Image (tube, rainbow, N blue to C red; front, side, top):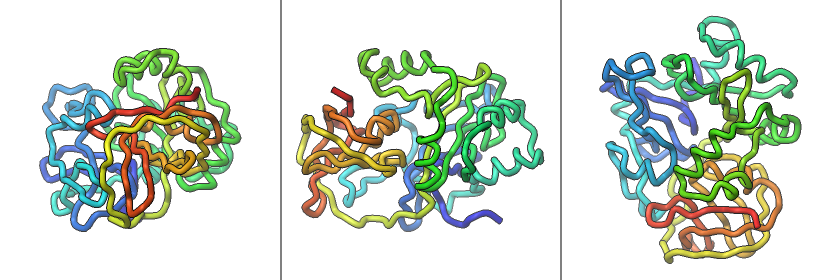
Length: 294
């Protein structure tokens, strides 16, 4: 038996057989913050499954055909799945252990363990299609690093493999950002290519977060610049960092590494007032936003 709690990057299968992935470690009462990613049609590349969400990003997720719920505490709508509809819960660390013990066969296993050579001792998981067991010949490797110390050790000691220029082009097109802007936020430690396979490293807190700790209200679009400082919280989802009198929170994962550390940035997002705390939220429906170095 694995852990009973739900964490970011976990997967669940609903009663209809569709696969969802969790976003954030927040545990609302009776439901999950999760987006629908795969549905079975018999025609898809993923062993008959097709992607419901062909491209990442909040702006794409907003039009996904699934249930959304308005969350007054966050001043935003989130994709949700009722817990009563969850049939199976898949944990990335369990899937990694099965690959490690060779209990589960995958053509990606050799690339995965070669990618990890030289890394410090970490608590790891695999997410994405390999977690579900529906990976195909061109699938990516999506790995999860758990915990604050693990995230910091990884960023300090892993230098990355080959760069992934395809990610830069795709992200520029998907987020409508100039190529130079995407190059400035690219970090091959977390996205790259190894032995011809694209990889990503994602970071997850090990603690469940409380639901609805603050009540937030939108104050409209804001653009600002200044020195941003982010510790390991910038690597988790959503990313969090401080800039002057603001807490910057990004629901767009592409900005996580540029929020880690200290640098001067320009920011566009939605200004939220959360019980007196001023937040700039990146990834709202009404304003896509960005965090870019200057």
